[in-house]
Amino acid sequence: MTEKQLRKLKRVELLELLVEQSAEMDQLREELEAARRELAERKIAAERSGSLAEAALKLSGVFEAADQAARDYLENVRRMCAEERAE
Image (cartoon, rainbow, N blue to C red):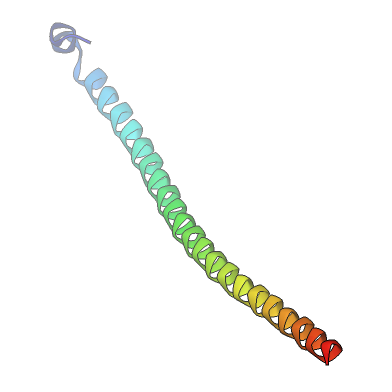
């Protein structure tokens, strides 16, 4: 709406426009707040997933170390068995 059109409006019409704009502004504020809450939830989820990924990597390292220890143990048992057979 142009300035010229606004000047031709009556007070009642101007007030109606203000009421409409106020209602629209309230709705936009609610949408903004909802978007902010969703963003905060996504940030928390991203932080948690990062923590979970780190935990998984650490556990993976634990499992790798346990697997290596088991391989070393079996190798030692086989070597000892081979030594006993050789004697």
